[in-house]
Image 1: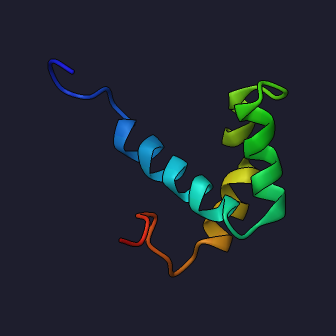
Image 2: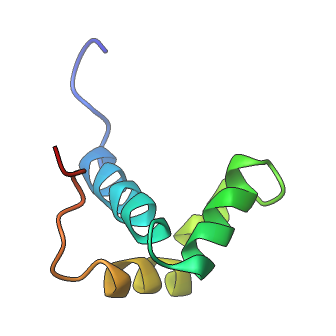
Image 3: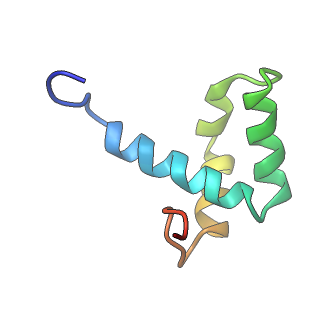
Length: 68
């Protein structure tokens, strides 16, 4: 990508990482993410306050980076 990243890019990337990490252990987050990936739900549903709060709660104390 040429030039600087758009405002909010790092936050969105971090939150998306949390969503994917949460989907590994949380069935509700996994279902929500699967529905989006399979185009059964709109991607904006990941931005719902309940979805964000659940992903942050499930991944508290964990890194959003995969283990090597």
